[in-house]
Length: 223
Image (cartoon, rainbow, N blue to C red; front, side):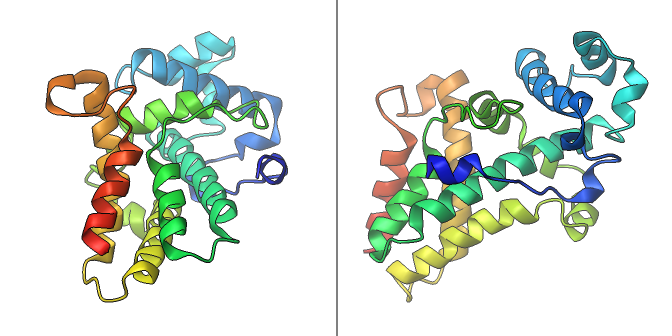
């Protein structure tokens, strides 16, 4: 899978950017350092001015790539879910056993992420922390319905739909496949958040992984 992912070309909704950041050195630098800066100071404190200072470029140069920081965050989260979708497709494509396929899919969306060195401008380990901490900010806005119509969250929904299809393979009669799949993905992010900040209300730790919990839950529901 690693060799296949090394040739991966991720395509992002072109409505999220003014100029494709992956077409220039400056654009790649914007992506790389926006991830690092958001991880360091949080999305609320993040500004294009601070990013410009970090990369030693004018703030106006960043606006040539992104209209605002919200669209930049949606771009980064879309990149993450696209990367996740490719990983899931490669991991399950030759798996015929539905239960094994479900186990692999759950593992991918719940495990601790390690940086993929085939994408030097994107640190997936750091980006995954942003997903845990900030992803809900892309959804919980007054513009979510319009942005959904524009396809901003299409790849995120595709990841969940892949899991829905696998759940239906495991148990075609289970009536809540959509709710279970979205609960696994969203719930895992929440459990990782609790593990990082509110440790007393989760069983998760460095030893107790979200993968074990959600695999156990899914099997007890479906089998």
